[in-house]
Image (cartoon, rainbow over all chains, first blue to last red; front, side, top):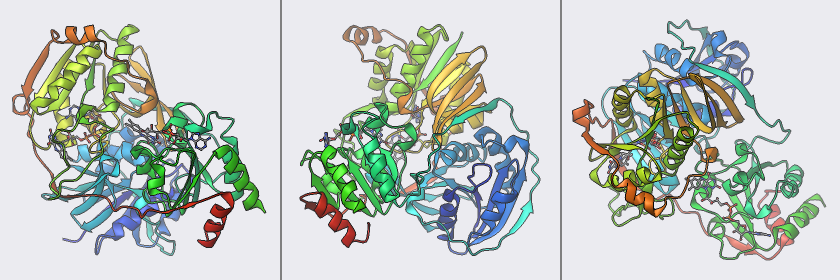
Length: 315
Length: 249
Ligand SMILES: Cc1cc2nc3c(=O)[nH]c(=O)nc-3n(C[C@H](O)[C@H](O)[C@H](O)COP(=O)(O)OP(=O)(O)OC[C@H]3O[C@@H](n4cnc5c(N)ncnc54)[C@H](O)[C@@H]3O)c2cc1C
Ligand SMILES: Cc1cc2nc3c(=O)[nH]c(=O)nc-3n(C[C@H](O)[C@H](O)[C@H](O)COP(=O)(O)OP(=O)(O)OC[C@H]3O[C@@H](n4cnc5c(N)ncnc54)[C@H](O)[C@@H]3O)c2cc1C
C-alpha cells in the first residue's frame, strides 16, 4: 500500500512556520509518499499559497473557520480527525504547537504516536531520541492503524520552494468544543533572528548573573546577526525570557554556529544543541563538561572575552 | 468532594548517566537511582498549593507501573498527597494505555483537575496528558507555568515557542506542568513516617478494564553518535581566527 501523509501546518495566522517545511522533508523520506498539507485558519489563503510552493507537496487542503483563529488543540483535533480517513500517516512538527496537538489526534484515532522522529527507515519504522537524547530508539508500528508522529525539526532541512500544489477547500463535519478559550499571547517582539531557525546562536548561562549583563550577549549577537539563547538556570533566574531556553525542556536547535557562554554543559542543555554544526564554549572552569562537546573551547572570564570578541569581529 | 488527581511516574533520576545495553535491548536500569519524574513533583506541588489555598479538598496520586513504583508513591504521600492509587502493570505501558488507565480512575474519582507532567524524562514522549484530555473530551492546558482557579474555570499560562500564552478552560480539565510552575517542597522526616499510614490502593489494568496493548515494537536501542572532541584556543583573537578559517564569521 502506498503511503499518504497528511501534515498539519503550523502558522501564526498569516505566515507558514518553517517547521512545516521540515515535516515535508521528513515525509519525503518515506518512499513514494503522497504529501498533503492541511491549513486550519480563520483565513487560510496566504498560508495555503506558501505551503503549495513547498517542493514535494501534492495538495494543500484549507479548513477555514473563525474558531481556527487561534490554534487550540482541542478545537483542531476533531477537524484533523475528520479529514484523516484516506491517510496512512498524520505528521506535525515537534514544536510546542505540534506537541500539544498531535497526541490529542492520536488518541481520538485510537493509535500510538511516535514523538520526535529524527529519521524514517520505512513507512512504519522510525528513529527517535529518548532519555534526553542519550539513547536512540528505533520503533516499528504494528498493525494497520494510522501512524501519528511529531517531527524533530532540528533533524531535517526545510523543503525548498519550487512546487505548485493544488489548493482545495475542505469542509469538515465535526463538533467543535467551546470549553477552551484563547485569552492572550505575550511574545517579546524582537528584530533578532528566530532562535529555532537562526544559523548562529549566542547562548548565555547562570554566569551572566543578571538580565542587565545579558546585554553584552545581545550586543555580540547583533554584530553577528545571531539569535540569543539561554540555559534553564539563566531563565529560571530571570536573566532571559522562557522562550529563549535551549535544551531537553526548551528548544532543540541546529544552528551552524552555537556559542555557549558561561554555560556548564548539563546533559539537559546539551540535548538541545546536539545537531549544532560548530559549538564554541567560553567558560572559566577548564573542567566544565561543555568542553567535552565543544569544537572550540576557550577558558577564561566571559566578561573580558565577550567584549573583546565583539571588538575583534567588528574590526 | 473537590479533588485533584496527579500522575506520578517513576523514572531514572535525572542525574544518572544513561547507558544503552550492549545488545541494544534497552538502557541499563539495574542498580540505577530511580526518582519521581521531576515534572510530576511539580504537578503534585501545584495540587498541594491549590488545596492549601482552599481550591480543593483532596489530592490523589496515581501511578501505572510495576510493584517497585510504590516507594515513589510513598514519597508523594510524604510530600502531602492524601491517598495513592497504584495500577499494577509490568512491561511496556504506552502513553495511550497510561491515558486510558487514568481515564478509568477519573471516572471513578470525578476530579475537577488532573495534573500531569508535560513529559516524562525517560521516554520524553509528552503525550499522556493530551491523550487523556482527548479521551475524556475535556480541555487541555499543556506546558503550564501558572494556574489560577476560579469558579468552574481555570486560567492557565503556557510556555510556548512564541512566549507565554494564556488560555481559559472550563473545569474539569487536564493541566500538564512546565518547569517554572513552582519549586517543589522538600519532604520532612516526620512526614515520611506519617505517609506510611496513608491509604495506598492497589489495582490492576485488567481490573479497571484496560487492555495493555503495545502498538509500537521497540526494535533497538543505540547510543547517540558522539561528537568529536575539539580543540582549545588560547584567547579571543585565536577563536575569531579559527571561526574565520571555518567560514563561520
Ligand atoms: C527535568 C530537567 C529538565 C531540564 N531542562 C533543561 C533545559 O531544557 N535546558 C537547560 O539549559 N537546562 C535544563 N535543566 C537544568 C540543567 O540540569 C542545568 O541545571 C542548567 O543547564 C545549568 O545552567 P548553566 O549552565 O547556565 O548554570 P551552571 O551549571 O551553574 O553553570 C554556569 C557555568 O558558568 C561558568 N562561569 C561562571 N562565571 C564565569 C565567568 N565569569 N566567565 C566564564 N564562565 C563562567 C561556570 O564555570 C559554570 O560552568 C533541566 C534540569 C532538569 C532536572
Ligand atoms: C522504551 C520503553 C521501555 C519501557 N519499559 C517499561 C518498563 O520496563 N516498565 C514499565 O512499567 N513501563 C515501561 N515503559 C512505559 C513507560 O514507562 C511509560 O509509562 C509510557 O511510555 C508513558 O510514556 P511517557 O512517560 O513518556 O509519557 P509522557 O506523556 O511523557 O508522560 C507525561 C506525564 O504523564 C503521566 N504519566 C505517564 N505515564 C504514567 C504512569 N505510568 N503512571 C502515572 N503517570 C504517568 C506523568 O504525569 C508524566 O509526567 C516503557 C516505555 C518505553 C518507550
